[in-house]
Image (cartoon, rainbow over all chains, first blue to last red; front, side, top):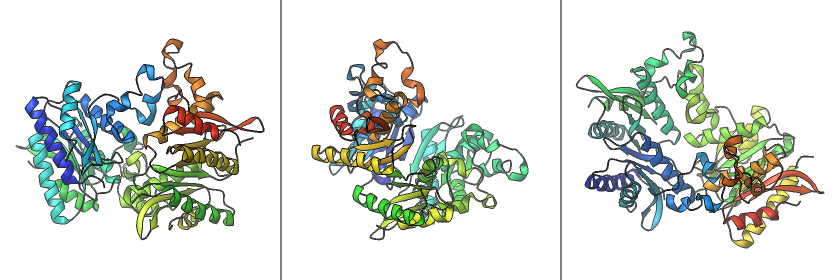
Length: 130
Length: 130
Length: 130
Length: 130
């Protein structure tokens, strides 16, 4: 099943609420299971450079059906997967991209960028179960 | 002044309500006055090919601070502006991209795609005054 | 439902058989319903320039869930949709891209290029019901 | 001599059979000696992100007529070939891309991605002699 507009709104609502509590302005994107954009919000004062980072984090998670930082393990210099990061138009391997689960199935992917990396990860986690 | 998240939500809310009344599933994007994405929604069943069209319509409107179809006048074959459509990464010159007005000032741009062109134009118009 | 490897093989088998009967060497691609490549074959002697055309025809069909030539109606100069062809990384609006039907539902898209346009269309049609 | 459709099918058949035995769903591509795609298959459940990796591995092998991991030796940080990985639209220097031999001559290249790196290498090897 692919994410509905309604569930995507719920994921973004949960994530923006967390971001507001933490007072961290971020960009949040929801992609469907094929990587097409379903919903995107840029909170006021969020970095312009984080728009693309949020999208790329979610896309990286989608391409391998795992958290963006799990893909990042293969991007470490000592993983010796030379050039992997340049595939698929560029991979982003640090926290903030996650599958969105609904009834224990992946229905989409969320990407968050704008705060410190652990903050992005917490905000993404807040939107990862709908 | 650049569009706030709150006003962008209002624009999208007005446009999606119109689209739902018309039973036309569309993609709707709000860009700020520099063309950076502020808000995006893809309604259920909207064409995947219309994601990029909605964004390009709004971007074209932003680049020249006018409706996308007004830019289209310069893209007509008889306008003899050879190659203009290939500038700026591609211009889209048909209805569905519009400035968003707030207190008679432009605060952002809306782009809509997914229905017939006149439908897209009506839906964009619904979100063009906040 | 998205196309299985088995059904994609069946579609390509039907299309290549038709192409062999017609003695027209072509490129044939099968995309899933999101546009990701599932299967591709280049018959011996098929034009190298037709690899990308076959893929773009199928992608255009996928983006709007219709035959590539139906999208082409909107790309006609008198349709006045200026710049539409440059969206989505380029649209291809002539025959040879079609939905693949299985139990009356779209499960993927086929794109064919290498022969004259009516030949490509016939070959694509041969692979469009599995 | 460049690879025929028949030999490409044989290479893919050998590789998919190995992948099925190993229960590893992968993407497999066969390129001709100039790097043009001849055959591509995505097995069910293979990662979408591995489509491009498989193609890039085979392309890297083709560009230098050697295994992708042999090119990778020049991509190591201590090889000091700064920026090499960004040439040719991106090089991929880890196992899974190999020449395809027929009568001891290179007739094409195979690229495999979707499993762990040693698995990809084994599956590519299975399709590298026809």
